[in-house]
Image (cartoon, rainbow, N blue to C red):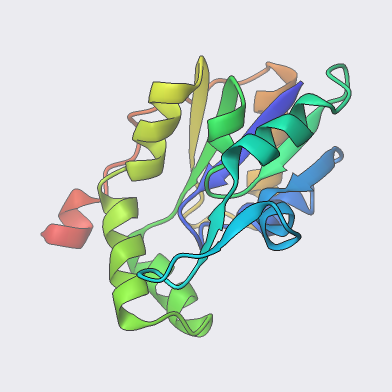
Length: 167
């Protein structure tokens, strides 16, 4: 079973994935490792080869529980866990990473407007949404494990950042 751990950059995907007792596939590492078409001249980032990624993932053991970590991992699976974070906290994380002002604005807008959540709902049969704001990485990892085991469901629609971002 392959499960996407997805969300806007800076919401905690990599940190949480590192705490889970499952094999993790870093989608961004695969893209950087060659599964790309080169740099997008407008955005300055690598353009992922979605077909190459899908072919690679299709060859993995379907009986092994795998976490696909990355902000577009939900494009490859039927189950996604979307991590969310209050835009005020997300801004500070992106600034600390050295993101440009335009990239910070793009990601804050994406988080406020539920862009990744909406994509996941459109593409996946099951989507759970975790508000990571005010939770430790260990707390979030425990919630993810409960979802993976089928002991907890956190359906989309619980998080609304519009007032914080636009209010």
